[in-house]
Length: 294
Image (cartoon, rainbow, N blue to C red; front, side, top):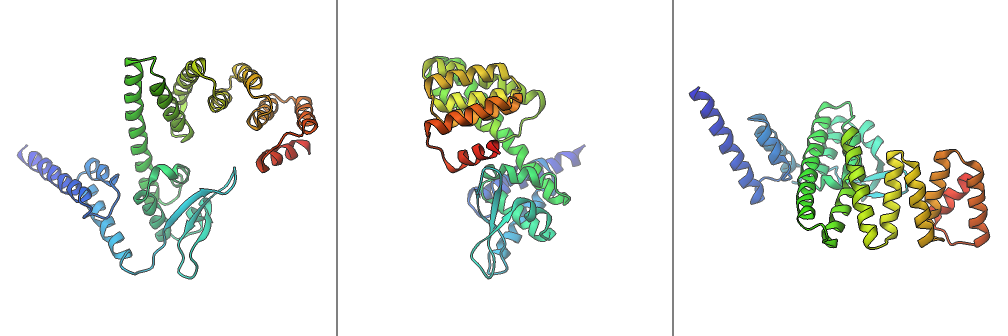
């Protein structure tokens, strides 16, 4: 039994050293890797050390392939900009970066994500979690688990603050915004997602009872779509129409609502109404209208 205590003591000491290295930026890995070292005795510390030297050597003038930015190019596709030796940036779709690239490049990309800000690349991590490369999958799943843990902790803190003072509008707003942010990440599944979507609906309605906001109305409607509750979605759209009758967001929500219910005539009538009123629309909204007109 003594050897077990000795091994545990060594593991704790190694974790302390890793944490110390991360705090003082001696180890050139992201702080999330501390949890890998903590939760995987011996191997976790070894992984952190290997990654440290890999990043250190790569930063010493060798070939460098990494994610520099990720931004929304359209409503459907996202691209990753990867540094290239001959050109400053090359846009690569996520699927291509994970499927076409070599194993070495895939692993360098996932490590760049982990060392940057994983929360900004949730979609990439979700796709990486389904990759054929087991190492890429391991890193992606580990990062998503840690993000989920952080989200759960923050939600618990916000729930306590809201319960302590239910009338505090600022806390209610912060709670609603963060819960919506968590739902948008699509990390919740099954009953957990349904529970939190119902919670969001309650919080949003409470917030709207205090102050109307087009953002909250839109989020509430989209949330009902996700729950498959078209009765409440329709009621939410009606309220939104009373407050913001010519809003582009309202038009897009009504298109989605009618399409979900298979109401083709209603879609045609809505398009005719929008065109007769000469409502200003963004390029994305015009594209949606053109799609349904055809």
